[in-house]
Image (cartoon, rainbow, N blue to C red; front, side, top):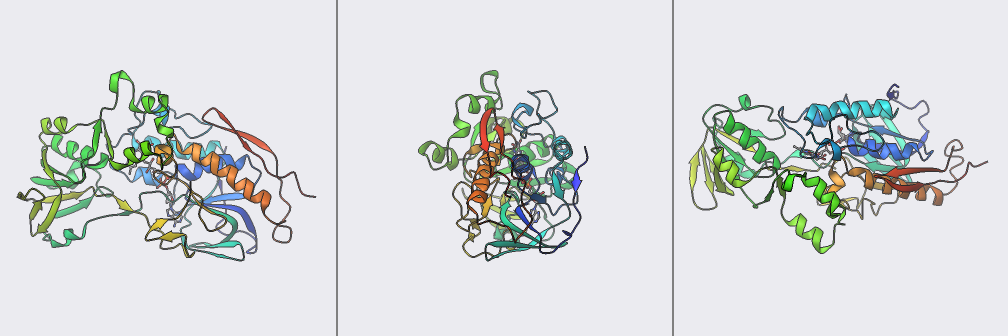
Amino acid sequence: MTLTLMSANDPHPSFTLDVLVIGAGQSGLALGYYLQRSGLRFKLIDAAPRLGMTWRSRWESLRLFTPAEFSSLPGMPFPASTSSYPGKDDVADYLQAYARRTDMPVQLGTAVRRLTRRDGIFTATTDNGTIRARQVVIATGPFQTPLIPTLASGMSASVTQLHSATYQRPDDVPSGRVVVVGAGNSGVQIAAELAAAGRDVTIAIGSRPRTVPQRPLGKDLFWWLTRTGLIKTPSGTRLAKKFQARELVIGASWRSLRRAGVRLRPRVTGAEGANLRFADGSEQDTEAVLWATGFRPDYDWLDIEGAVIDGKPQHTRGISPTGGLSFLGLPWQHTRGSALLGFVQHDAAWLAEHICACERRAPDPRGLHAPLDRRASRVTSGGRRVEVQVDAPRS
Ligand SMILES: Cc1cc2nc3c(=O)[nH]c(=O)nc-3n(C[C@H](O)[C@H](O)[C@H](O)COP(=O)(O)OP(=O)(O)OC[C@H]3O[C@@H](n4cnc5c(N)ncnc54)[C@H](O)[C@@H]3O)c2cc1C
C-alpha cells in the first residue's frame, strides 16, 4: 500500500472538499480512519514534511507512559508487545506505517496560514495554494508554542536556557547546576535524566501534581483507568473536575526524585542574572534553566470570529459554534483520553458521526461539486459499533 500523497494543489481551484482535516498527527489520522468509511471526500493536510514529526522532535530517551496495549489507533494494533512502553521514534514509525496501511489521503508540507469561512464554505490559505471545504476539523495538536514565563528575560546571557520542546539529551545542558522549572511528566523525566547524567539538578514544583506509579498492584495505570471506566469520565462531571485540578505525574514520586539526587523546591518567583528565587524565599545560582512550563496553542491563523477566544478554542465536545468547524485532540475535549494516542479514536468516531449527520442536513451540494459516492458504513471504536451512515447516492 502506498501513502496517497496528494498533489500540492487541487486540479480545479473551485473544487470543494466535504471535509478538510488540518493536522495529520494521531488525531487527524484517527479521524481519517472513520471518514474513509463514510464515503465523504476529505483529505488531511499537515505542515510537516514527514508524518510523525511531532513525536520525532521530542527528546531522545522519551518513552510512552501508555503501554503499547493502550497506544493503538483504530484498525491497527501498535506493533510492540502489549505491556512494553514504546519509544518516541517507534510512535513516529507507527504513524507513518498507519497512514500507508490505511492509504490515507495526506498532503504534507502544507501549513495553513489562514482559515476563513464565507457563505458556508471554508477557505484554507496554505503554502501550496488554497483549499476549499464545507467542513473543517482542526487537529493541530495541543502542544504548539513553547511557553516560557516572562521572568526568564531577567536571566543573564551566560545562563543556558532551554525549553522541554527543544531539549534532546543531557549533553544539551552544560555541566554544573541546572534548574528544571515545572514538575509535570516532562519536567520530572528530564530532571531524573539530568541527575543520572551527573548534573546538579533542582526541580521547581509549581502547582504540586499528583504522582502515581506506572504499575500499581502489578497492572499498568491505564489498565486500571480503562477497567474502572475512569478514562471515559466525561469532562464537566465532578469526578473529571477533580482529575483535571491536578496533573498526574506517572511512574515517578517525589521520594524517588530525591533519592536520584534531585533537589525539590517550590515555584520560581523571580530571576535575575544567574540567580533564581523560589516561593519559599530561597535562592540559587545556576548555569542552566530548563523550562518544562508547557505550551500554548497557536490559532493565530484561524480568521473566524468567535472560534477562538483568549487563545482558547470554543467548543462543546469538539464542535465549534461556527457551523462546520470542529476540533479534535484537545486535552479533556471530552475525557482524559481525548489527547492520548490510544483513546482519541473514541472522540474521532463520535466526530465522524457528527460530520456525517451535518452532511445529511446540508443543502444539496450539486452545483458546488460532483455527486458524492455516499455509502452507508459501520465502523467500530474500541469494540463499540458506531454507525457512520450518510445518504444513499444522489441521482
Ligand atoms: C512529552 C510528551 C509525552 C507524551 N506522551 C504520551 C504517551 O505516552 N501516551 C499518549 O497517549 N500520549 C502522550 N502524549 C500526548 C499526545 O499523545 C501527544 O501530544 C500527541 O502528539 C498529540 O497528537 P495530535 O495528533 O493531537 O497532535 P500532534 O502530534 O501535535 O500533531 C498535530 C499536527 O498538526 C500539524 N499542524 C500544526 N499546525 C498546523 C497548521 N497551521 N497547518 C497544517 N498543519 C499543522 C503539525 O505539523 C502536526 O503534525 C505526550 C505528549 C508530550 C508533549
